[in-house]
Image (cartoon, rainbow, N blue to C red):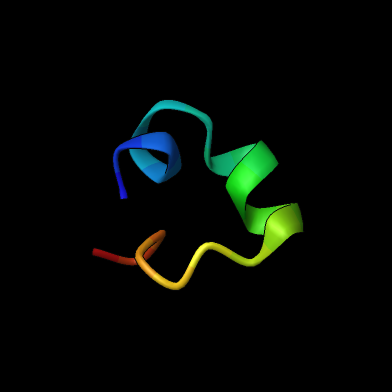
Length: 21
């Protein structure tokens, strides 16, 4: 996700399913 690309540390904790995309 966009947030995953901007703040991987935050999304990683939240569990962003698109963090790997």
